[in-house]
Amino acid sequence: QVQLVESGGGLVQPGGSLRLSCAASTTILSFVAMGWYRQAPGKERELVATIRVSGTSNIADSVKGRFTISRDIAKNTVDLQMNSLKPEDTAVYFCRVDTRGADGAPLVSWGKGTLVTVSS
Image (cartoon, rainbow, N blue to C red; front, side, top):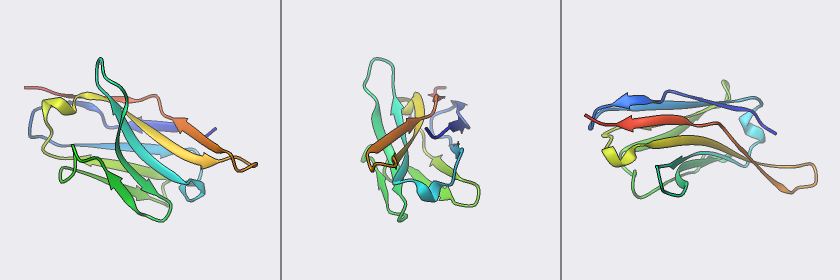
């Protein structure tokens, strides 16, 4: 199991920015993909952005043009830059890693989450 530690959440006013960071306990080059998901109160967890080992990224339509995902291979981190934040972006943001076990079976690891609150 990969250990993941998120940081960077907090309270921000509408229109503001935050940068989330997820640090992995092992080299991210061993991962199939890394990404960010979020879960708002009373709602299901949803994909925000992912980046594959190839560097290809996928951004949810709801945040496209406002959020950017990036990775730092040397630091084993994946970051989520969030700009033009809206109240509806309020949620707990979770880091997720997709890997494969020794038998090739898919494995998923989650961080504990970091709270982002967008409010005036």
